[in-house]
Amino acid sequence: MKTYICPMIFNSDYYPKLHGCIVLSALVVLPLLIGSCNPKSENTSTEENTTIVPDTLPGDFVKFFNQFHEDSAYQMEHILFPLEGLPPTTGDGDTSTITRYFWQKADWKKHNRFTDPGHNFEQWYEVPNDRFVEHWIQMKGTNLYMKRRFAKLKDEWYLIYYQGMRPVDRE
Image (tube, rainbow, N blue to C red):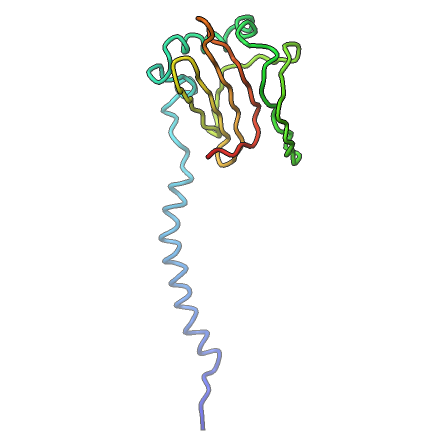
């Protein structure tokens, strides 16, 4: 005759093992969670996060870039209107395939210096040569980018292209 193990005996042996696994998991995971929940130290000011590194950009571009964001009249004088680019996405499933778009002087809103106190964005500059600079801003964790192109024409820097925040496939 076969003897069957009572389910209560099985369960009573099982729960101490389960309880041990839960405790062990908590001991391993809890320090990781606590460490990731600590606020990041604010050793860098917002100004440090938005200043550009002069040695990676043409020297006269740094001066232009600062004045471009401080002086609205200077900004308007250094944009080639109608300015080619793309409007920002509307976020409502906007997958329009606009191939050419032009910003008009009458509709232009002044670009201020980019600040990111919440650290939700990354920004960088691409400098293929000393007469062309591309400024990128990406919302972290997304494929949303804002892009501006600046070119040195004769002896002055100008904004020659502006794409508002929209999805871009970068490879």
